[in-house]
Image (cartoon, rainbow, N blue to C red; front, side, top):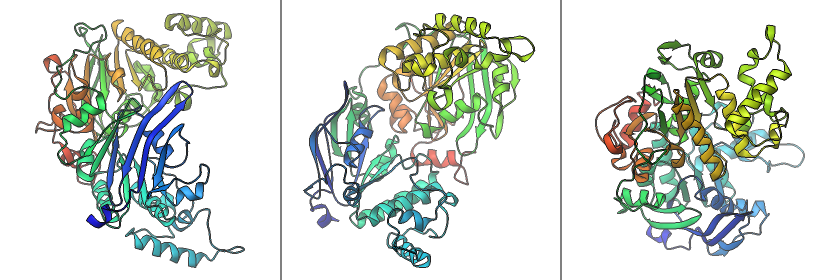
Length: 548
């Protein structure tokens, strides 16, 4: 490998600047990856990773800076074929065509033959290509018949077939179980031995230590660290991501900057709630007046927990109670009737009907209360909407304005209005400030805090630290299990380390909490919960590679 590494860099990006209007997405960022190297690119959400990837793959032209492949200038912007011969990105969401075969996907857009395609020859050619890179997949199989891991291998083989020697992997392990991750890493190491270079993007820092040679950290659009992984302390890496000094003194996080809010009687309980392949048995208690955070990346299982609480998913086992009464699981209407309000992650896809008015969107969950005998009276709809507009300070011309005409923050307030319309006992909000500006974030989180202060409970599902600062308690999840619990005082580095599965934030230890709530350490001390590293993933996966 030494001789390979002496070659010119597979890619060298330097001084990259990219603006989107007033937003500075990249500020002089850079990245150098050598042949045969696995180079991690990490940073919190919004750090600039996606923008840098779009520049490296020729999707976006930078405002300043330079990209070179193998010492040569990057292809001309817009020359897609030339960029494909240099670099490819395997995204978390597969870019293959499910209804086509493996062979057809491998040669999509460049099928041989001018008049007729020789299908047998195409499959044989695909078989040879796959064999060259050790990919054991039937060329005649349709992509929809393959697992996530096999689809990734097909996409990698397709990229290499163009001549690309640099592959960017965007969260490649997010949907894989422990066994699948092990196989993926084995394949990547074999390809590295052939001189293929990888940029590895992951929210799981333990995987960075397991697979990568070098790591580059982006923070606030800037490149703040590039260093060999070996010898780099975990707390130093987390500190680079968060901007805190390693071992910095603890700072208390509460909504009002004071003591944590007193909690009352339980409003929500789960006992042994579990969904195979997503999260292990969870015992959770949320009390009146309390905001509880479920912190973790999407692959941690926290989003699925929120969807399960809201009735969007049916669990394999366990029970949910609201104010002591059992809730029929797997049913959105039953969850609403039981007193569970829900704010989905994607307001555009799941939260709003764009062609309808503010009033119609805000009253969707109470339409049965707006007229006699199942009718909906426009006057009652408008009056109800006016009250919600006033209470949440929604900036709109009136109840009849199309919701599509509102700003992102005000659209999100409409989604929250709909969730609060039935005066729920508990509000479950998944990444409630996603895609809104700083001022709107404060207002939205203030609404969540007011819900709890009014005698209900709230659950915030997020990996955004600003979302979690309003919480009285935060449970950190990693690969389907609660690995640490924090009280009202916590440090950014502690929480990030727990969510990333490294350090003292909870990835080490032997006690299996199974998500038990109500045991926060004083001053925000993390309580270790469950084995760390690869062992935690394997335990969460169970004997068949999925959560029990």
